[in-house]
Image 1 (cartoon, rainbow, N blue to C red):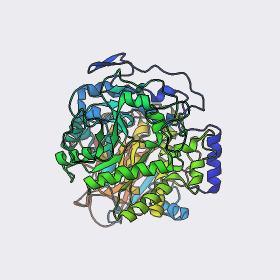
Image 2: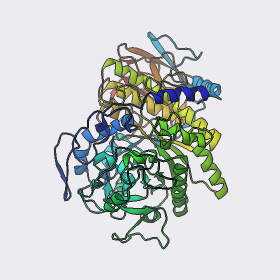
Image 3: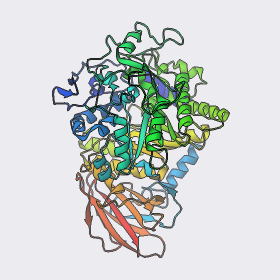
Length: 640
């Protein structure tokens, strides 16, 4: 942001604007293998009780999590009971809950899927012309943008997902040596827990299941320094303050009024990046410390590091929020220097053990953390932002990228392969199950925040997010050659037609704009409307048919019809995904395919609110495609 934008942004923070503020602390407090309405649930030898809703929280409370933590509520209300039956592999990843301008604008206008050939929005109705050139120059679509999290093998296969992510708040405190010990942090009373209810290595089960389903596992390496010492639910931290703060003195682990030493001893074992000694595949479970290089060694030794092994590692989960999620053992807010040092220590370790691994970081939680450190919160909600001021008043992510680039240049090799962020829409009701007309329309519009420089975000952000171009510009300026990952996103409306339209457009945008890795949090049920939208790209015929791997330029003659096109590089098949954003008007779409090559056509459609994909007759590529309100279609063009 420029200086004027910075001032505007800080003024919003000063009056208590927060991402997705709901005013209810319980949005982020339900984690554990139980249904929200199920009462007490026995797991292993312990009993887990649902957290009681807390009172409304004043604006000064540490509710940075509120917007992105709504995902905890959705996840835990609908997924955790089934988790126990699904087995430890799924439970392992579910440990957690519920971000030249003219040149960029020009490129986006040129490739935008909803603009006519002359760059202006076409007539809203009548016959909508969608023009594409099957021989046009496009860009490769990364297969890893079709990611999910917390899914068992059957869900991975039904959705056609290409990546399954571990992660979440308790993953910061996963004890890989014990294999099934976590601490839930603030998500559930800072208690230790076994989310699988079984002995053995949940991580190994997860990797084996994910690889067996034909997907890539994305592992989260704990880097906070403390992991659970056991899986006993009665082992918990007590007298934990409501929020973290700055250290009482430089280098101290304590904050004013709270020293974490006693709770660390009660709940946790120290965890280190490197072991000063030989790396063992099966360390002593009674050892007084846990070593993360030994875990990477174990994963590589057991599963390999190649295409069919473990290649992707995230450096913890949202370390910017440790002082909120894990206040009991890490109450000190992370600053610019802390975030950098922690990443460099652990990323360099991973590369030393697995040189061909792909490392992701810094895995920050959302919009505020792209620009500021948590230490910047201060006592005035980021208005002073003293930590940023000490670092040249640079937004956090560009500064961090520059420092990692310099350190890697000195080292002579990369530690960072992919810049990793989380992103949740902040507009009222968008990331929820709400399906009233106003929320439906806002949800569909909010997808524009991923790319559109003209879109003013309809939330407390009230600014042009243009997430992907912004992050790509920061990468180009600060560490060229780095990939881009959005490893948590969700536009809500999972059971609604508007959620399906938003998801179909998000996946199309990720491919068109060149995102390298993306993962939906957690996963859409395959037979839900959003699940059908996902399958439209990855399994639209029920037999593994997929959207192409080479994005093609495509232009729609209506601002209400989104279009995304791709070519299969191996066969020449062309696929076009169409989405009618209108909640009330049917569109008739006519494909205008450039060139003289002949094609046969087939159409697959997701009716509004349906979780099915139905094949409907299509005589030829020139036949009109009827799109009722909030309906999706994929047109497959096979070379004759």
